[in-house]
Length: 243
Image (tube, one colour):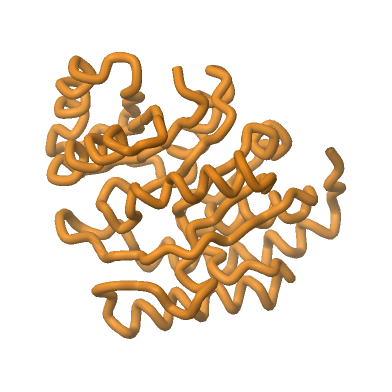
């Protein structure tokens, strides 16, 4: 077993899953992968099971009964990683919007430079996104501005989903109390990491819109994030953040 686990949630990602897995396993730094599949109708889980025969000690699969949300998938993966003793736990999309090569930079920020949370940031050095329509760029950029304004977090890319956590962060955050399931989940996890006083580093990446498959973004996810940030900030006044 390696010390790093990449958690990849999937729903209808049969076009991307084999390629992203092979790419991660080709990196100079070794990573294990946990795929959490929400009963994809396109047979994504079947493809993963076939690949497990090729990578039996590095590729793992957890199957759930249906679409239960991005946040719950990652929480499931975090608990899996903690039970098995991984030191560095990553979030990454299956669709190549995140370049697997950047896993090495995120890990180095934590393992070599002493940070507790490393964020693959689209906005720490300008706006680094490829093939997004302008309205999507503006919505994402100003969402991060809104989050900084409300929460006070010094994070340029608050909704980023390409992340490395150290084990200590995930052991400290009360994972069973996380309530958001969409992109607000990403904000909530960063906010709690910030409030507990962990060291955070934004690592510049280039985000590329998926070439295969369909985006999972919905209006409900956007609404949850907008109102969820206000609720999260208000609730923070009534709790203690000690570790």
